[in-house]
Length: 257
Image 1 (tube, rainbow, N blue to C red):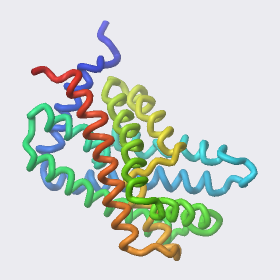
Image 2 (image 1 turned 90 degrees about the vertical axis):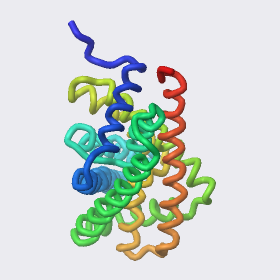
Image 3 (image 1 turned 180 degrees about the horizontal axis):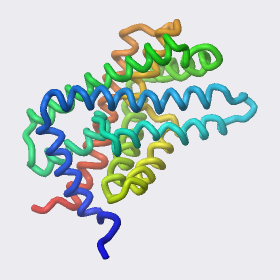
């Protein structure tokens, strides 16, 4: 009877192989799935806002916990249904680079295209679902603006360190998902690490691509410069979390030399 999961050594090899395929994919693949990746994560974060923003303040962190519990639906759609997310690619495509399966040009090409298309997908959801439909306004307007302002008001160092913690967990969610050979295992493997980063409040660059524009559309006093600064520093932190803390350390442990 075959195993229903991969061992850590096998996960690293699978991750590098999957990262190689991502890096060698065509433009239309990266554009379409990059858009979907940004949109799916944003729908998950929209669900978090709708749930956490409607709980009474007296309930403390319970509302945030329930909201965090539904956020991973976005990553589940990506991992099972198909989508490209820059944060998990920082780990997977990074594994391929560290395994010498791709060169630096392919690594950077993937990172740039997927980042840009994640922005498009996230802003699409923020504008059409959040603003036009009003799902990030009305009764959850305070939660939307408070969440976005807390993110842009952090210092650059706080953004970077928070980004590291976030993508350490998100990349581990993808890593655990890679270990499973069935759909249920893939979803459960990703669910709890991702739920944990949301409950803690770490900064995820793609989630921020959604919630900060959503707050701006709703009238928050956030400038495009604030948005760009947050994107830069959180992206750097996420890169360190995925490429160094997951792909890098597992490469040291498991790569055959």
